Amino acid sequence: MKIFVFQGNPDNEDTLCADFASVYGREAVAAGHDVKRANIGDLQFDPILHKGYKVIQELEPDLKAVQEDMKWAEHIVVIYPNWWCTMPALLKGFFDRAWLPGFAFHFRKNGLGWDRMLSGRTARVIVLSKSRPWEIRLLFGDYTNEIARGILGFSGLKVRITKIGNSEALSPEKKASWERKIGALARRGK
Image 1 (tube, rainbow, N blue to C red):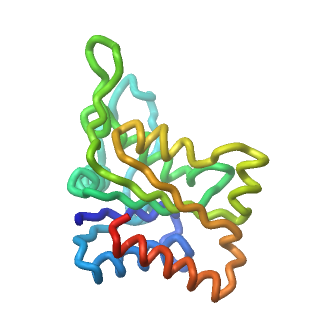
Image 2: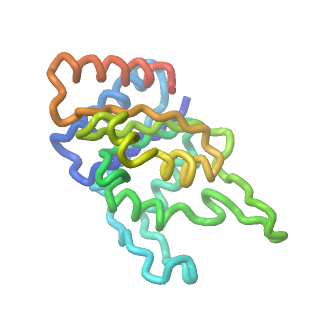
């Protein structure tokens, strides 16, 4: 399987997101999958939509490269920390800029619906949070709807979510347990 791992924490070093992205990539390769990876913090692009979608800004080379990797992939993995019940601003800026008509979707001329340009692919979203997922959901609602339905699902990807809570206080044993779970997902291409 062709897998693209997209690490969405702007801090690429010494973070649990980066560690888990490495585990996923390593285990997927060991299982015989073809893997590509990008770290949001390594990409050079303007994350601001200066004119909204009235004027499409020219995409920077890094955005075009990630789009190509996503079109190449059969399975896309997005790993990021939950900050204020959503993804980091830089990751949201990536989606604002790169998730465009012709790449991720195409609105029909008759105004009735849209074509999902990334159909036939699957996605795994791994979200890390300081709080427990059930606490966040109870207090603030579904904090994964934006990525699962509003972005990835909108473009046709079949999305599965893994929520890792209490991430800043994981014991070595709990971290190792999550690494085993993520490794198992990677080996199966899930």
